[in-house]
Image 1 (spheres, rainbow, N blue to C red):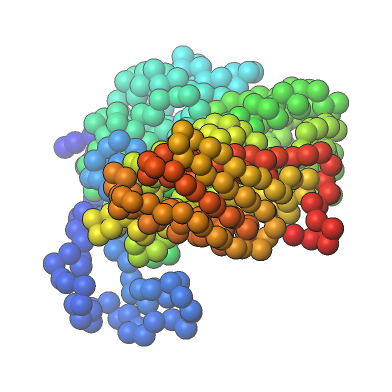
Image 2: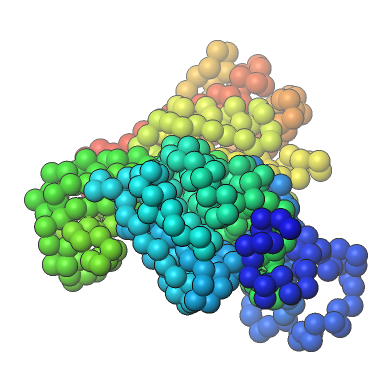
Length: 552
């Protein structure tokens, strides 16, 4: 009998095996008549895409989602069990392995409260060990504390730890797994994207007594969708599959996860994670000067752990100002957990904690555009010169948009999945639309900007670009091109790009180009646009609207 079969509850082993890899609809075409699940044949009375397929049950373990999660975490789909967030995976593991009144789980306090909560709901004993005074995990102390526990089924470790942010070395996790061969080590990596720690997901895929938990709630902005997973051996996935409820994942959550994990979204996620990490360190430095904070721990999560004199009073003060923080006096006396938020949220929290952050609000924004032809994500930061990462699928167009950002002096990340097998038109047009949407959002109310910008010559070509960020879209393009294409880029799309950008940015853009070389003429247009934008988006001091009307 295998280790996992020996550790599982007899009630679980008595259940019939569930093939979580089986896809009930794969043997049928999209037009199959479904009369097997007592579903309502009529779509719900909801307008738009929300209604698509919601009257039908989703697959219990959608293969598309498992493939996407497996690719994200570097394992095979057979090693992944998709769950309703990592919380659901915790519950399912405990229900699979822990017998009422007999078996135990271990936790290292202070840590995530759900481990103990689900164990007690199942009637399992909770063995509480402690982190060190500096909230580090001491593998020797932990192993000594559980040395006599023959019925310890699950040992929960959180890396980085919630709420303190401390890392847990991968070597310590594996050491515990080696020292306790009859205990399953459950490593919660909910916050690992914000740390420098290596993931042990690949190791869990080949070790019977190691399970890794992951979630899309933190780094991928899907807390409300409730999508996570347990990663382990194929045998473990099949075993806990017996404890899964039928149809556990909502259709809308599955669609949201698949859209969020599309290749075009990955660069934006990476940009946001880097931004949160940078904000975390910046805010930690500012809070070190707060009269209300004794010390700040900036670990590996998307949060800070604050040591304060009177956490109850401070939590009440923040609550009175409409700011919610995590305060758990029984687990962490003297500690508060502060999540890194948006710029405005961070500014409000700093002010409430007696810190003058200074500076002006950042001008950062993202935009996403999904159509039947394209899937696009864009991020811009008007007050940073980097990064510039552009992948439209049309190399010359990538080069042109990079010129706009470089000469405009702002950061631009843009990724597009388009129907290039048909034509480049949709990708080029939709990228311009999404780019304009992101620029418009980043500009906000446009207070204090220059508003107007102008022109640039290049070699024998001359391009004049005049721009007015007036909020009123208009486009005029004067010039023509002899060549039909530059690489895979159709030259006829140049005027279309400027028109699409003007429409979504809310700007008047006038372009006049002349010269002999079509490459130079096109490049001059985009470089001139960048230079014109540099002037127009520049902050000139103060926060007045650049309009005698008082509105843009």
